[in-house]
Each structure stands twice: as structure tokens, then as C-alpha cells.
Amino acid sequence: MTDSLKYVGKNIPLHDIRQKVTGSMKYLGDMDLGNMLHIKLVLSSVANGKVIKIDTSLAEKVPGVVKIYSYANTSSTKYSGSAWFKGENTPETETMFSQRVRFVGDRVAAVVAETPEAAKKAAELVKVEYEEYEPVLNVEDYLKDCKGKLHEDEPDYYVKEISCGNIEDAMEKAYKVFYDEVETQKIHHAAIENHICVAVPNPLEGITVYSPCQIVYGVQSTVAQILNMPLNRVRVVKVPVGGSFGGKQETVLEPICAYIAMDLNRPVKLEFERRESMLSTRTRNATKGYVKTAVDKIGHIIARDIKVILDAGAYTSGGCKVSIAAGKKSFRLYRIPNQRYKGIVVNTNTPIGGACRGYGSPQIHAITEISMDNVAKSMGIDPVDFRLMHLVQPYDDDPTGAPNLGNSRIIDCVKKG
Image (cartoon, rainbow, N blue to C red; front, side, top):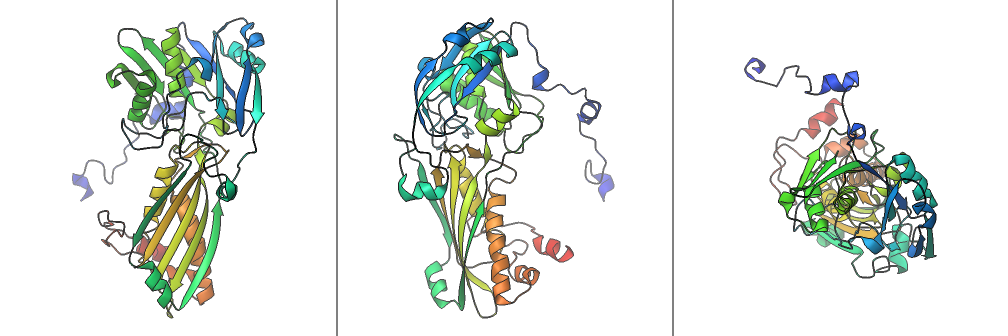
């Protein structure tokens, strides 16, 4: 059968595999345009505070420094780094630079110079004076008494529920009800290639942005929004990606690069070092999950109630999307007639969360699978057998209302494993 198919059953090499294995692949870090300037960011050293003064006097004396940017001389347009297209209903809480800093790594200023060395040296000489506030470092602190304090003029608390069946009735009729609490932590993707961007202005055509991004239209839309330009004047070129794992799905460096390139009318490059990528780009959202599971005498789950508090970090960005994605995935693995998911997204004074290998799957399945093990143990049932009792079958309906699950063979995988 595979003889008549073009790809199935065939050994098809990747189109760029030879360049990669021989080391001849050109990444954005290799791009060196004539007349190109280099940018180095000044990142906040405090988790929660307000910039009172930025002293650039010493930095300006470094040979090769062209200009220094901050909230005082750039666009204050708010945007969402997770927006995929213009007009998307996503919380817009970020700005290019912020006077009100909300995490260690928040963007305070940018030094532009003729060489990377001059930009780095000058950035180290920028002195920032802060008025510091007590940081909110976890979701429990936020829920105690910090609601509305991180973003005074924007929401910093979002709730979404998904449900099927009748949770309350099933819980009342249950033979036993079990409770579990599970936490997952923030991690960083640590792709080999750090975040990087190059922007090249063209007075007649607009601007071209080179980025190893995952969603070119999201970058295009956000850059156009900040520059107040039509979409057709913003060209985004997706260059070879040196690893992402979700970390380059959102718009991070591109607005700053594009803004400065247009302002100075010269090509610019902004390339992060490892510490900057870990602090000031994206992470996997930390979560705290609460699971309430109701079973009958045989051990069948008749109801499951899940509440997940997701730490979006200092700016909401893709936090709401990750929370919804996690919630929907909690319905699609097991046959449970009565289910509810409540996702709560909160802001804390920690690095921003976003897409990271599975888009909510690692968090929600860590929470629910630990709970499944605990329930199976309490009922005296082998954990594998307990899962086989509940796993979805091919072409089961999706309880969240989406199309059916297709030819899902998870039960075969578990049996063979």
C-alpha cells in the first residue's frame, strides 16, 4: 500500500538537514548588515516597583553610543505578546518599556550603539533608581490580599469555567470523594539559540523584521499596532529557528527592534544572552491544582471537579489561552460523565508565562495523573487497570463541544506499554 503513497513509509530527509549537520546553516546571529546598530536592554533589578530616575550620563559618554530609549521617549501603546492576529480578544497589558516595573527582568531601557561591546558597556553604566514595593511571588499571596494591585488600570485576575453533566448531584451520590492538591513550577525552555531579532527600515516600503519566531502574523500585527502602520508595511521574515519549544511563539523583542529601527532609520540587531532569555522572555506557567474526584463502589469515576490557579507572571500575555487549553485537555482523556474545570489566571511579580511544550498539557496532566494514582491507591485498584477503566475510546464525543476525538488509540498504547 505504501508504494502508492508519496511520503508514508518513505525515508524523506528534511530539506535543510545537510546544512544543519555540516554546520553551514545560517542563523540570525550570523546576519551582519552594513550600517547595523546594536541594542542592549537594561532590565529591572527589582520585582515590584516604580522607576523614579534613570541616569544615563555615564552611558552616553561611551564611544559609539547613538541613543538611549526608555518609557519616557517611546510608544506607550499597550499590547499582548500572545496575540496572533489584529483584533483578537486578548488582555493587552504590556508596553515596550515600563515605568511601573513588575518583575526582575522587566524592560526599563535600551542602549543603541555602533557595536555590541559599546552597547553592553553603556547599558551597565545606566543607573536606575526605584521606589520598591512588596512583591507578590506566588498565587497564594495574590489571592490573599493583592487582587488588583499589580495592574492598577487593567484586570489581573481572570476566571473561565468549562463543564459537562451535573457535578453537584453526582458528588452527593458518590460512594467516596477524594481530594488532591498538586503544584507545578515555572521552567524556561533553554533553546540553544537565545531570543534575537533584526529590523531593517525602508522609508518607502515600511519595515522588515527578521525573527526566528513561530507565528509571523502575530509579530506582524503587534509591530504594526505599536508603529501605527498598516499591516502591508510590516514584513516579517521567519528565519531558521535554533530551538523554541514554544518560547518564540509570542512577540517579545520584535516591537523594540522595529521601533528603534524606524526611529533611527538604520538596521538594528537585538540579541539576548542566556540570563536575559531566562528572565525576560517566556516561561512555562506555574500552576496550583485542586482535584475533587467522586467514585462509585466499583471504582468508576462518576464526577471530577478541577480548579487550577495559573500564574501568568507579571503580564497576562498567553496565560488565559494556556488555562483554557489545559481545561479542555482535562476532558479528553477519560470517560467521566460529570466534569468541571475552573481556571483562574492571576498575575504575580515573576517572569511572564506562555507556550512551552504542550501548551497546558504538562500542567493539567501532572495535576490529574497524580490524582488518578492517589485515587487508585485509595480504592485498592492497580493504577494501570484504573486508567483502562476510564480511558476514552475511538470516536468518543468531546465533552467540551468540539468535534469527536477521532480514531484515538490511547487505550492500545497503555496496554502495549
